[in-house]
Amino acid sequence: EGGIERHRYDVVVVGAGGAGLRAAIAAHEAGAETAIVCKSLLGKAHTVMAEGGIAAAMGNRWLEDNWEVHFRDTMRGGKMLNHWRMAQLHAQEAPERVLELEDWGALFDRTEDGLISQRDFGGHKYARLAHVGDRTGLEMIRTLQQRAVQVGIDVFMECTVTDLLKDDAGALSGVFGYWRETGRFVTIEAPAVVLATGGIGKSFKVTSNSWEYTGDGHALALRAGASLINMEFVQFHPTGMVWPPSVKGLLVTESVRGDGGVLKNSEGKRFMFDYIPDFFRAETADTEEEADRWYDDKKNNRRPPELLPRDEVARAINSEIKAGRGSPHGGIYLDIASRRDPDFIRKRLPSMYHQFKELADVDITQEPMEIGPTCHYVMGGIEVDPDTELSSVTGLYAVGECSGGMHGSNRLGGNSLSDLLVFGRRAGEAAAAYVAGLAQRPAVTDESVRAGEWSALTPFQVEGGDNPYTIQQELQQTMNDLVGIIRTAEELTQALVRIEELKERAQRMSVEGHRQYNPGWHLALDLRNMLVVSESIAKAALARRESRGGHTRDDYPKTDPEWGTKNLVVRLDDAGTGVTLAEQPLPEMPDDLLRHFQ
Ligand code: FAD
Image 1 (cartoon, helix red, strand yellow):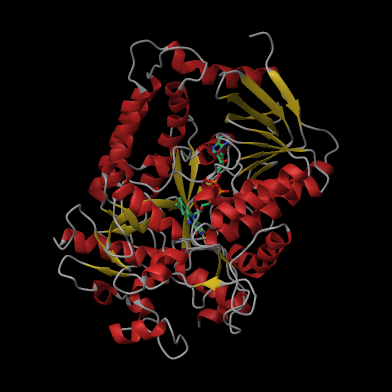
Image 2 (cartoon, rainbow, N blue to C red):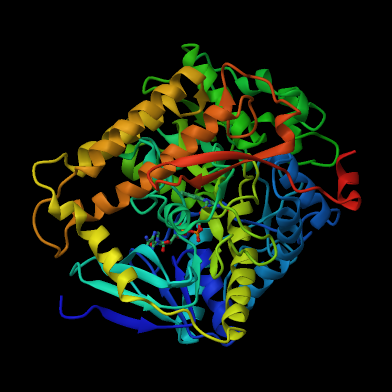
């Protein structure tokens, strides 16, 4: 192979979404030689698709808002399974991170008084999401990217990391990957690696996620010896497009409901009033009149049930569709046309207006949208120390959607973008400090590089095996049908049997052609990650015999206080071919925070 391209940095960040960019900026500012590696073009990360906004208790709309209220909302939204310390740091630091983003050039929408505007979202007591129309992610990425490039951080674009490297003593020493265009391999030596690879949505058939979200960071961490937590909790966003088929799953932002949109079934009934759970009854309007008054007078009225946390709304929609009250294309209706005037809709929701006009030929200022639940976000991820984002592997950090703990069993809208900023900064600083304190850098051994190479080339060595596209399709269908919104032991067991079969077949999958831009080969490599992540989700889902947040068991419909005291932790098994589960008690919340829930 004539020697593999090699580079050397202090900190390598894998992923160029909000989390990766913010981590890289922090590492660089702390004096570390820093590089970012990303699978797609810079600027194309998932973060760019974020629409609604960044949650931060800045108190611009409501003086009453502060970090403690945000902390409480986040913990309650996650049904108390969140790591309290992460939820605390997140709520405390989000406002500073938003203001800093503004300092770096982000242009937020304003209030009448010229402050950063904040919008309402499900589960947040006060209007709290800083936003730029419905294109907040774009502004965030633009700002962070500009800053990262300006300060001189090197970017390896369209480069996929396939393995983490370790030295003989087991210390992390760098990453191994390939350039997508040429298929040539590359090694980057670095004692600290920050994983910021985003989500896992592509394991499901109907998803709002793009092709990149194959759970690479989750799988890389597992294979390096780190643990994952909260994997049974996958968020199904209540509102994805259902028609036309080519865009099924594409997100319809929650801002539509935040700005006045309501959900109706085929009988024209505003059904969410039938689905208010006891847990949220005290703070939810129980009549249409009160719900409608809330938009103008939030002090004296309770929130509309359309703005309950996502898991509640997604389940309600699912039930209406199952009961035969769905729309012609298997969804239900989201109506803002009859509630707001066209100018308001076009101004507040420009992307939604265009999305429906261009893709579905629907004018949302005139007609209701047809929508249904779509796999959107994974709460589960790499288990980290809350203050430093260090995993259980020395030198390996994780932030953003690929990390776990912050959101517990369900994430509130807007809490991801703020999570990226808060913990991105913390991880970057911690990684830089770790490297600065090292007496000796772990070495990249030839053996570890050869192992990376061998493993990446395996799909070329098999002839006549399954093609990766077939396996991927079957996996997506399995996860959709058997590990979806509503789960049962029988279906989850069946899913695990199918995943085992798919793993077997994946061992023998083969790809055609050469290493030059070869999507089949890329998929074959991604598929290994999708399979181990899917197995983690299904196993944890089978073990958790209760319903909570993003995890609903038809056979255990109640939330069980006993399960509320523990997390499920996933690790790679000894053979390295599957995963094992263990129960772990939740970290204990200190009394001064506990009082918010008493
Ligand atoms: P991403 O932005 O997903 O970036 C991951 C990066 O990792 C990419 O650069 C990718 O190329 C790279 N990568 C992955 N694997 C590899 C590999 N093997 N090698 C190299 N690079 C790799 N959240 C909110 O808070 N508010 C919102 O309004 C909101 N709206 C959303 C709308 C949509 C349509 C979607 C899909 C999500 C939305 N979310 C929102 C969620 C939020 O956008 C994501 O959770 C968040 O952007 C994830 O950021 P991240 O930095 O963790 O990863």
